[in-house]
Image (cartoon, rainbow, N blue to C red; front, side):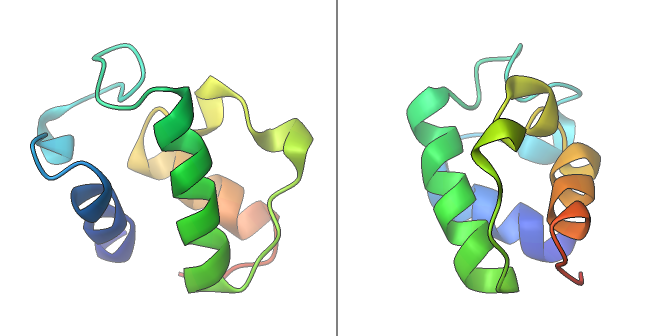
Length: 76
């Protein structure tokens, strides 16, 4: 999960993702950020995240992001 936190911190260094319970609701990630995050996750973990999986609830926490990476064949 630290790898995911690292990606998030590179994407938006001005936010404290570890203090947030819901990245989307707290305004830490917007739709453009999610698309950038998907690209980074695909590159880092060698997965292809299905377009149908790109919904806010899959990117609102590190656990949700981890789950979507694992669902698509990635190992953390």
